[in-house]
Length: 194
View 1: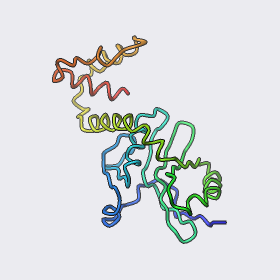
View 2: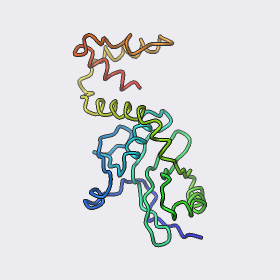
View 3: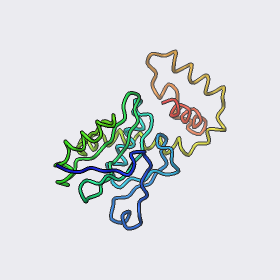
View 4: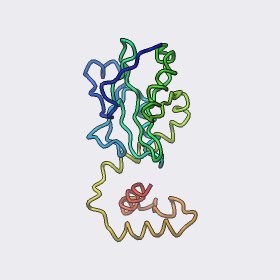
């Protein structure tokens, strides 16, 4: 039986120290569904999973490294706190850490008492969707660097109605690949609509 404690379960990305960054496979990126100046990820699989959540319509928001848990005398960080339309989830990645695997039942009970669903994800499943995740990360990079205040409202309105009217519409029918400079605004608006 393991004792599980947390100072707070309010998701707020835990600060990552310099030494921890140097030890980790560290990534930093501006995300759309995590409303911080930058999101910090301590592994490639965490960055990829964030990309997949950016493309998941059921995910409203998420926080990487949301809080510290003490399990016995050892501290752990869940990978993500995820707010979905119907549920809240805390995500751990399955690791070789024996203690995390051994206290899975206690963790599940701890979170279910607080109406939070606890998930242990196999990182192999994330890597199987690596191309999809990279595509979403590319979209996030483009959209987060685009000045949305300068959007042509008429173009946005026309694009939205065009997409709504069509049951099947390909990207090539919307974006003129031969004139990318002209269609950058259309491309960014389309990404925002996603």
